[in-house]
Image (cartoon, rainbow, N blue to C red; front, top):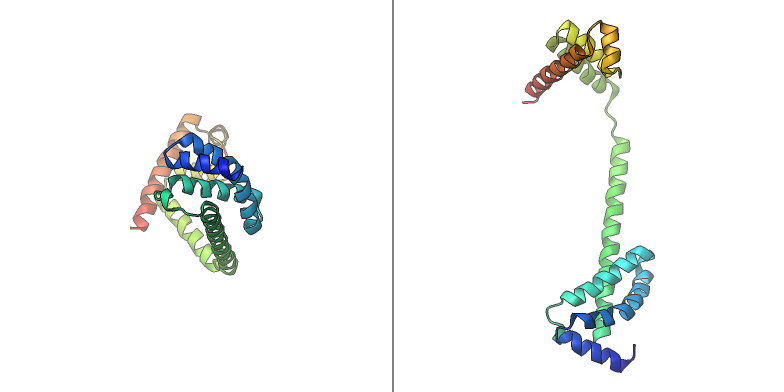
Length: 178
């Protein structure tokens, strides 16, 4: 884009001609993308940063005050890239903290065993013998037809027993957490 055509489209854009922005967008988008790539080293991120920079230009409320268009544009792009790099660094640090935190904390086996025993105790105390039998087989992965065959019940009865067991357990467990 020559200086005179740039001045022409820039003045039209300042007058509110949205189509003029399209004439400015294409040549500057490519320049900004290359500039942002030097910072970000990622083509997709550089393209996004270039687009966002041009979007900021489009939305900038004080366009008339921009004296050096290219300097303003590339400063905005640089700041955006630096912000993105800082965010990515923070994300990496957080990911590392999570990774370190999760690998260092494992619930002790004894604690897990106690929780399992407590759950089994609640299940056994809450459900009738038929409900308990159906529930245990359900937890082992049997579907309603297989449960019906194993328990001598109809599939509908098995479905009803599972529903009743689920409701009873939901109530019993929610009382334990109140």
